[in-house]
Amino acid sequence: MRTGARVQDGRLGNDDLRDGVALTNLDQPLFEDAGVSKREFVDYLDAMSDRILPGLRDRPLSVVRILRGQGAFMQKNVPKYTPDFVRTVPVWAEASKREISYALCNDRPTLLWFANQRAVEYHPTLYRVGERDRPTHLVLDIDPPEGAAFGVSLRAALLVRQALAEAGMAGALKTSGSKGVHVIVPVTGATTEEVAAATRALGVRAERLDPQLATTAFVKEDREGKVFLDSTRAGGATVVAAYSPRLRPGVPVSFPLDWDDLAGTDGVDSIEPGQFTVRTALSLLGAGDPWADRLPEPQPLNAELVEHGRQIPVARVAAMHEGKRRARARRGSAEKVAEADQPSDQPS
Image (cartoon, rainbow, N blue to C red; front, side, top):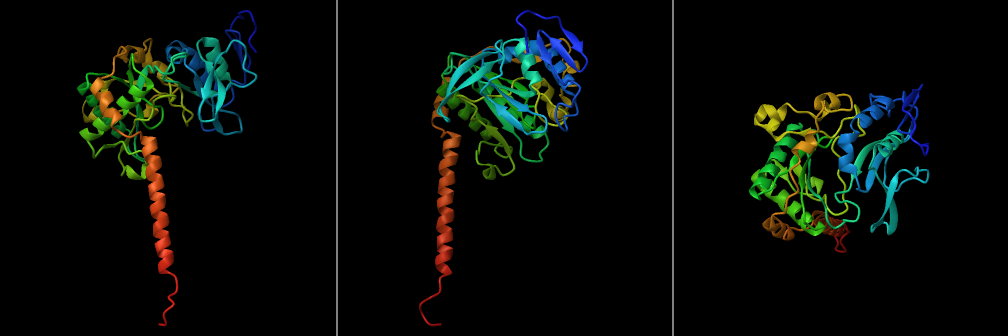
């Protein structure tokens, strides 16, 4: 529990006290198969706080937590025991028809408190508090097919970069911390609907540059082993923050990449997401913050991109209708088979 006054940092055996926040059970494994202790995880987030916090500040936050002996879960609504120093904001959730109290991770004590709760992943919204219809980023989530080399995700990211350039725009690239990558495009002066439309158009334009490599097919069985360009991250969606750990063996992190490092086959094939973990990221970064350095300045959306996107069906809605159509077709086929199997009234 954090006291009202600032308390001197210090190590207390298996526990620490930092910025008035009690950190407990630090010598235990973070989670099964993590390969790191809770102390290593907390130390990483603490050392990275100046780099992580700008991407979290004033954005409703969802975290992925894991409790000892239990499975992982995504936490949106803050628990009742959340300390007073953690700022919160109420957000109406249309899907569940209720108000959710989200945390705002705006400072080091809040980040440390989350770390002590074994909140491993940090997923902020694409908008700031009070600006829900003004997203600050456009996101293309690039997901390779099962078993594919990481390089195919990077090749697909280069398609997105080319499509952006043709629209007079630019974005930054980072690993997702899992098997894919994110292209993040800072935007200004756009509504949620406009950003969503532009994202759909960007995905389709990138797909057209190399339809043998990439697809925007939302239904997995329609992707034919291609890289999926997910253009659905808009509205109330979240994206894992740059430098956030991921809840996977070895605890990889979402790490910024330089477009120049992808030049040529050797560049694409020399990068693996497992290179970037809570144990390696700090030494790879040094004193710098490449994510802040590589993010372009917020830019207006290309109007033609928005208009093109408005002609493209929303992927989730289109997939829902297609799923219903296929279900009807399967039922129809089953009925025909059943009719064919009925015994004839005519003598044989």
